[in-house]
Image (tube, rainbow, N blue to C red; front, side, top):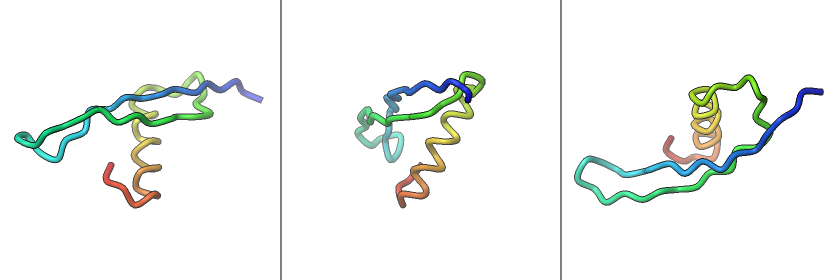
Length: 55
């Protein structure tokens, strides 16, 4: 069984260039050691889409 790690990602979100933005926290669990940061963001985007949220 491969070792995994959990992360808390704090992502800056805003609707547009003039809109007020804020950081949102996302829990990423069971991420393998060979997963790149960009792959982790893809996983997060898939989770958000599955929850009906905007990635």
